[in-house]
Amino acid sequence: MSAEIIDGKKIAQSMREQLKERIANLQGVTPGLAVVLIGDNQASQTYVSMKQKACENLGIYSRLIRMPESVSESDLLSTINELNEDSTIHGILVQLPLPAHIDETSVIEAIIPAKDVDGFHPINVGRLQTGGEAFYPCTPNGIMKMLEYQGIDLTGKHAVVVGRSNIVGKPMGQLLLKESATVTYCHSKTADLKAHTKQADIVVAAAGIHNLITAEHIKEGAVVIDVGMNRDSEGKLCGDADYDSCKAKASAITPVPGGVGPMTITMLLFNTVESAERFSKVK
Ligand code: NDP
Image (cartoon, rainbow, N blue to C red; front, side):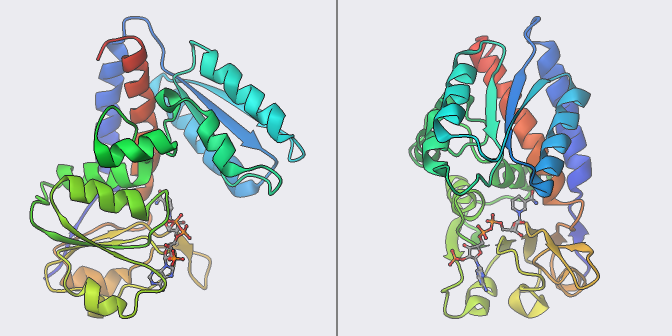
């Protein structure tokens, strides 16, 4: 068997086309995303410029607020408060990680839940579990869209999520549960990873370890979603799954690059448009 390759770029492109139509229906309201970037971490700058470019291509207004590494927590919180009040801004994103002297929880909780397009505020995290209007974190929500696009029915399927971070693993499991999958979480203290992943109809690998998941870890016909973004010994971008061996055994697999990655930014755009619709009562 050779797996179907789940083309994240193609799915992301098709979602972006749909978003263009939704923006056109906003009757003159331009969705606005504010990105707060602190310090000059190279990776953060790259992510931020990718996000800005994606906004620009779609007709979303993006505002970059740069602050020095030495910024005080109170100055950062005041900036967030101003953005909370700004009617041209529908989404606020503070690029993580933050400098050590700033408390991440306070910053995340300062963003009003209605503009928290990253889906990290406890109100949004809670509503993912209990229901109600919310934003879901971009990476796992993008994976749900991919599975939907591929026509993979989740009802009654056993999904094993490898990783339990707040931004990927935990919300991933919750979203799969919402769609009636039976969910198992694995993490660094899991006693026998393979014993769990081998039972899975769907494996979501989000540990950040190159080649953690090999063909031996999956059953014949499993769906493998690879979230990992790692560098191999030659510096090449690679995922958590051993792509070639898993591809030969799986029924569908996401490549790295070109799989989950393109969906993450697309879901940020999606949440920003959704927010603009909610604020302008189009929805
Ligand atoms: P974290 O480092 O926050 O979390 C990693 C998780 O993996 C932890 O829960 C950890 O367990 C678990 N883990 C570590 N080692 C093992 C192991 N040997 N077996 C099983 N579980 C293990 O990472 P993130 O969740 O932020 O990201 C995960 C990966 O996804 C990274 O490679 C990251 O770069 C990538 N990523 C990709 C995105 C994309 O758009 N494609 C977006 C976001 C992330 P424990 O909790 O016990 O420490």
